[in-house]
Image: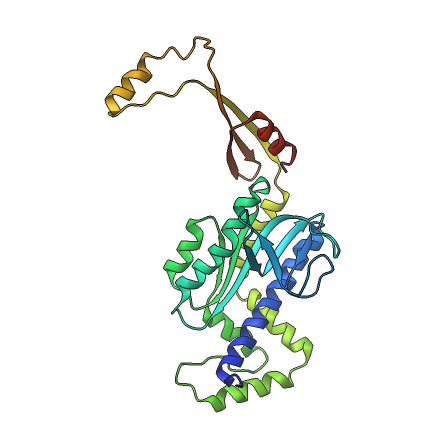
Length: 287
């Protein structure tokens, strides 16, 4: 069954939006010597999708990954995971936020030694709650409102606005106008989608670059040893702690190593390992 003109028009806006984002991220990648992976063929992976697996072996489809030491034929280290979404209406925006989280957070956990940048570039109508949900779990969020999407298409004389009761013939007219545009004009619309909100775009890109170029400022290592003691009441536990002579040297069994890595841009990462060898291996792979 053929797709409705309304659906096709929505896909056209979404694709144009993604293309504009891709060009902006490609500029960052070139400037900082990184590889930008995106949908399409790549010798280093099968098919056209960008797919990474989490610790449990689950595969996640992604939009954009910035890699260090990545090439056309070699998968690199993931320094940034960036998802893009376009929605005309706010319904299902919470579900989309959860979908983005579900795709990226398991990978952020697996590759935590890189403390990757987590980004979501959202176009169109999204609820404040959906955007806040993404920010609450560590995403940098760039939201380009629906009105700015309309302004971008106005540049080439196309009225992109629509409602749920818009006749199908109007969508056919929009698609016809779009098909008659040159490749350069279509690219102009994609670039304009980001240009209409320069301040917010600049803030998002600056945050991305700060993560990509940060350095380690210090590493705090805390070997923990001792015998655990259990209590039923807070007062009893407090009394026990108050009686400890923490300055006295005590021989006790090793428990774990805790480390806090602090970066030049204010980011930090706390890790805990049950063995010294695992902690050393983490540090050897730390960037």
